[in-house]
Image (cartoon, rainbow, N blue to C red; front, top):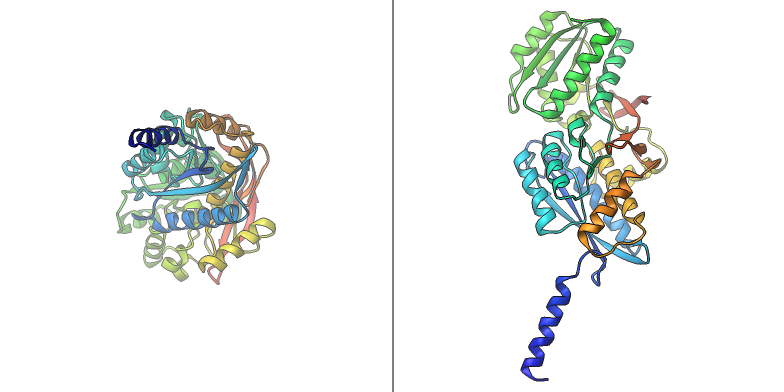
Length: 390
């Protein structure tokens, strides 16, 4: 072969490869994960990655994902958003424009999911947040979905529960005013509690700012307020500090939490102080049955600890995405077109049987699903206490 023909052959091959995309000769599906592997809540990122890796190994080990008349191997690309809003938007941009993923799972926390969702929607790339409960994440964003219930549902669930379970007539709230998730949930709880007990029944509405570690002033006000219950919708790294300081200052009444308590790390950090407390969340590991029990056992055998709700929701979100990809009936190889097809398929999902519950999407991309109230047992386990459905 002449040098000229050899060069032409190489150029022809490069041109052909430049058109290789999802569904081409490589037969690989690229999915991005925008998760906090470092920063304030690294256990959230760890659980997300562990669940995703377990699912990827399962699918690829069984031969891959069949979509139409082709079978694909899954390739997962993990980007660390450092638990920061600006890093989450940068991660989303990289995954979309450089890595050219078909879709993105995450971010998890609302503080990162809201800005990242704006990027994904602008670039018309499907995104599913497993754990972001703030309504703004999906609002007016047809390409953005979630696998969890919303705070306008969770807030009233918590307010109703403390009213009925503890007979609480006066409530106190302590939350981070600089973070979208706790701020939104605190407001929904207050609104719901005062709807039940009347204006002014939330007798203390105390705030702090991210990274604060001394809550003594706020907790002193809460104790003086005469509240019957304390609601604090904070993350697993903050809850132990709040609970321990409350007990040290003399608080001996119920403390109620939210789904951000559900990390496997909570009891390691909190110990006896958190035993006997309640929180609303997405699933309970203790006493799980069926597919949920199977997931927990596989995860624990592989990684050495019981998966938290973030891991379970990531499993569900990723399975949701894979189902939607299959329901396109076949990918074209044109990334823009395939992203649109996946978005359309996600919007049509009905009665998806997840390990965190059944899901049917609303037009906003939000699932209609139940919440679970968990009690932390004397052994430090997250026990199912009751289910609350819309």
